[in-house]
Length: 315
Image (cartoon, rainbow, N blue to C red; front, top):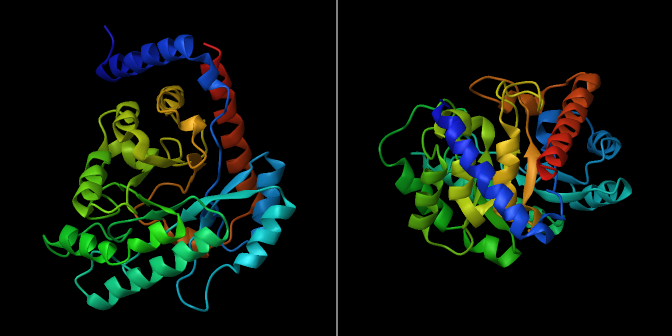
């Protein structure tokens, strides 16, 4: 007798095979494989782009590092380097800590989050990014301030949501596991948050399979529930390391994404973000890592994912 998760996975497999038989023309485009670069830490942006180019990766999720008016990437330089290595911006990974927390009980931190979104959404549009990741509460702060965090978060984001419409950038709400943040832990939570905010600029979701492993009963089913709201999917294996290093059921994830038509949407990406285990991943952005380790993370992940994708499509 199959285990419960196997029954759910088999149902998705059957749906995929039927979809493939009925609509083979919709499977011609491959999923757009990107990479989130903030985990590369302090290395130069050009070094990062060189690595992605060597790995055959054409998209990048940029570190949202405009923490102040005088900080962060220069868009002209970023565009020049990306162009030199044949790379385009998928989107920007918004970074929300206790210093810029939409849900904070300190108004100065809420204002910092609002100002940060204004800077980062403008940068996203300037470099051609399709989405900006938004965390409803600080990452690295799992303990709640009080029971009004959702109310403050929605109020804060509603005050700046127009900028996403103005810049043509998708605001992508990311559910994060309860070990790292205090609110919005699942796809269902993200949908409820979006529905309550009720703004055309905030209509999308950034999924993350590592968080989904502990917050969802079945990743494939949750991706299908997210539907067309899903615009980016962070990837890491079950140990939060390179794809293929753990026991993640990548085949079912690939099938679910094709069922969503994810491969035919120019603003939808699969983006590894292997940060390693732990409750607070932010130190990675300020560290130096042996380039050989980063090379292995990237090459192992892209090779494994693309090989599984071809196997799935050849079923």
